[in-house]
Amino acid sequence: MNVHLEYYRIFYYVAQEGSITAAADILNISQPAVSQSIKQLEDTLGAKLFLRMPKGMKLTAEGEALYGYVKKGYETILQGETVLNSMLNLEQGEIRIGASDMTLKYHLLPFLEAFHKEYPKVKVNVTNGPTPETIQYLKKGKIDFGIVSGPLEKMEEIDAAEVRRIQDVFVAGEHFKQLKDQVHDFSVLEKLPVICLERNTSTRKYIDSLLYNNHVILQPEFELATSDMIVQFTLRNLGVGAVVREFASEYLASGELFELKFSEPIPKRNFCIITSKKVPISKAAAKLLEMIISSKQ
Image (cartoon, rainbow, N blue to C red):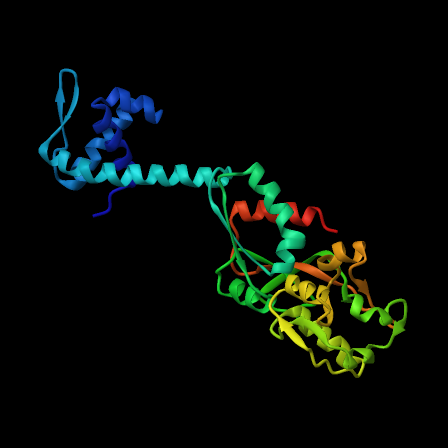
């Protein structure tokens, strides 16, 4: 049985209003068009759906049975349209983001604050993890986009956009003051207790690769999960910490920590936004991305 869905929409309004005239006004079509649609629906279904009464239209028993189902279906569609419009107007919805503690704290957080202030009803879900995990989440469709630290290998299914420059540094406290104001070769790190991130992070991989290319093999004293913890260990003189400068900026400014100087500067790298080439993102996620990319540093 092939019934045009428009007939059911017209049937819904005639049944709801009990009047062809009222239904025609709501649907903005002519009364004859409404009457013809009802007749075609009845002919197709092989059942009388309405009785014409002096004051309008009354459902038959068959019409009542059909209306119970049409009402649920059509009103569910209307609810779906309402939800969709709310999402398109950023009155509701959800954004799923992948970020490390570093990219979250030193880049993403201010944008989330501004976005939430402007669109308070949009839910934001942040999955915290290192860059390799964030890339996997994106490939599996678990997040709309990720903010990660480079450098990144080229990936066919993923687009990457650089949004902020960052600088890796080695910092130390009072116990290592003999190293201050000197220019060192990277080889000095082989003789020091170094504190750095775990091996599954992009930052650690970057530092290891940089030092390896300079004939230095790092043997850390401590491998920690977060850069904040590296700073705290360094403040307690447990070693020389390898972090992105922003994490130690407060203590560098106060003089509690100092930055080691090297004869060859550590190249800067970037925070990057990664998106899937295969999976479209929601309007809310696109709006947040627009805010982030437009303020590229």
